[in-house]
Each structure stands twice: as C-alpha cells, then as structure tokens.
Length: 277
Image 1: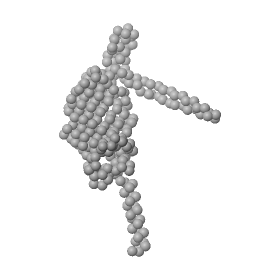
Image 2: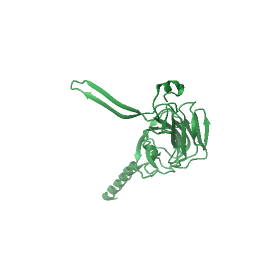
Image 3: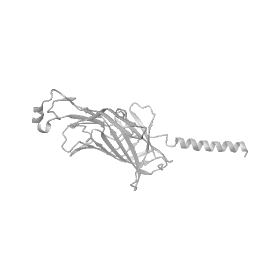
Image 4: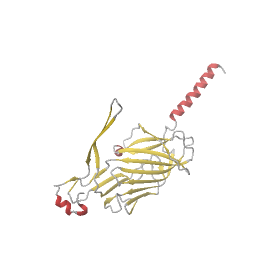
C-alpha cells in the first residue's frame, strides 16, 4: 500500500472516530428507550411546586446510547426554576448526577432537554432507574381572584395528569399531594383517579404514548400567603484592607387572592379560624 493511501486511510479512521464521539447519542428516537414503570409525585404543600419522578428505563438501542431526551410542556417552561436528573444502576444505591443541556428543536408544544450519561452509556436491554426533580414557581391560579376577609383562598393547579415522556411508557402512577390531609377540594379531574386522604392518585395501566398529554386540573383551598420576590439584590463591598461588608435588599409581595373590601379588625378577630386568610 502506498504512503498516500495509508495517510488517507488513517485520516478517514480518525475522522470517523472523532465524528462518532462528538455525535454519539445525539440522534434521539422515541424507540431508543421504553419506560417500564414510572412513579411521579406532585407536592402542592409549598408555593414552589415540587415534582419528583422515578422511572425504570430500558434501552432498546443495539449500540450504546449516551443520552435521554426529556420534554417540558411549553406553558410550564416559564415557571421552571430548577431541574435535576440522576441515574442509578439496578441494585446500586449510588446516584450519578447527569449533565442537563437544552436542545434547540422547533416544537409548538414542547421544549426539550438532554440528560447525558457521560462515560456510562446504556447498553442494549440494560435497565436503570432515572430520578428527575422539577421545581415550578408561581404556577398557581387564584380562583376567585378577589376574596373578602372571611372567605377561603381557593387556588387552581393545572398540569398533565401523566408524566409526559419522549418514549413509550408501560405503566405509571401520579400522586398529587394536597397541602394537608384536611384540605377541601372544590373540583378535580375525574379520569383515572382515586381519592385518598390528602391525596389524588392517577393511574395509567394501559400504557402512555410518546408526548401524550392528559390534562390535570385541581381546584382546592389553600389559605397560606403566596410570597414572591419582586426585587432582590446583594451588595458586596470589599475594602483595600480586606474587610468585607454584605448588604441584602428584598421586596416581597403576596401574589395570592386580592382582598375585596376593607380590612376590619373586629371582623378579623371574630372570624376565628378563617380570620386573616
């Protein structure tokens, strides 16, 4: 073999390797994985809504795969303030935190993220447990928007009853935890639901297709203030002598239901449990 042919062959091998390493796991397909079982918990106890999801995933891809694609409904992305993902091998209690990167894909309904397994790709038919944590702020709607001093504050939480996945899901369960066990529920989505003490449980045993969304709406009593920072700044002053002075300034607003009418101390004191809601 001539030197020129050897040089071309070596260059071709190096280029193919580099290209494959740069693009490994980038070509996402809904058939890459199947979600064997999924458990999701929506915690409404605090103003920042916490969603924990535990998924038993299985790789269907013949060659190793390095990423897992994660969709977020576009209406929710403006409220998403925290997103974390980790992976756990079956029988291993050690969680490996995954790198999360937004994907630039055009979709009218979703924004996509990519969870990267780094140097621990998933092999064909391998199973792992994927743990996802999401925090959403200012996602509650006041209904009614104005209340009197003695009325209860009623809020609406809207989301998807099922976990929206880029892949097929065999079975899943969503638990909606209310603020407490005595929370009064005005209305809620009735499909696939069972009502337990302080909780709504939505089950999907017949499978959920990729990117399927079943709407969830829960209208319930929640009298706690809903605080939101309208202004926050931290000033750090460092002198030439090494002294450090820190000043923090905040403005906090209750973005819950507005007070209709005037505040009366007599009404407030006589209202007992409902006073000052």
